[in-house]
Length: 399
Ligand SMILES: Cc1ncc(COP(=O)(O)O)c(C=O)c1O
Image (cartoon, rainbow, N blue to C red; front, side, top):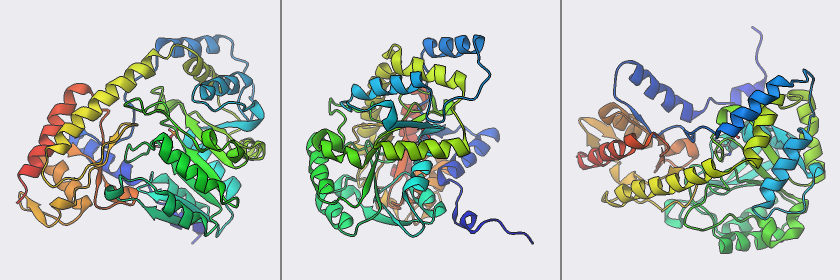
């Protein structure tokens, strides 16, 4: 029998999608399901984005486009990142892809040879481990439990970089925890990074506009401009602009890396479609009221979720300050039962919660932290309070 390539044996379908599929099946069977599972922003971009897409159809060139990304899109991106203090980049420092996921995959191909090491904090966004597997890289996972607010410390980073991983992948604000590194924390980590010149740094910071409490977004290069030689900033339209299905991701970094990603594009995707490019330019350079208003809404929803988390005895839940996730440590429930269902771990917990209360969350083990689960709180506002109430009731009913 003909076999698939060995790397496919290592690739796993997303655990997040598995929960979403189960919730969908229960819903189709008539159950009242509230989904806290998928990490989608659940809003649409402003009307100017659709107008730009429609206008682009009227003057379609019908041609292939630039492998790097259209000049107009790169220029809009450059202005966009200037607003968060990433100045001095040019088109030659940038490239694009079919979402940040594709861009991260291209970066893995561009930077990691088989057997090289990719270092990243745990909990991590599931795709990091999967991409490392597919390209044959080793993962160096740095545990950051709830007791340290799910954040990497300078000492941990120092110990990790001393082993000279080829790439350190940093994610701020974080999916799945929603935690945001403060100015001081990023500065301290940047000092460590600066001491270890043998490692590329990817900052997957696609939630950089979704920061609460006036905390601001900070990047290593703000504090150590010399790190521009090896820091690659990753961004996306998906979350900020409510455009996950449009599939536009970006990098800004060293010219050699941007060129490598562009070369991969020339062999994979060729270009981002013209109509999507037009929508992307409009999103980045048009009115910013939709993202601004949504960020305020998410901050209020974060408060609503945290009020319930703080009221559940035994639950440990660091207070997130960005993105749209809350990541409670639910290990106080392990060893207990709900309605005859024994809960030994996070997967049991999420299954019992879905069965008993119709609330879908993602088990923390999908993100490398089996003591926790992820709540994504972008569901329609009227569903949030009942979903949280069911979550709280579930805990109260544990025996
Ligand atoms: C941390 C992180 N990076 C990258 C991505 C991928 O985003 P995109 O939709 O641009 O591919 C996600 C999506 O959930 C994410 O949470």
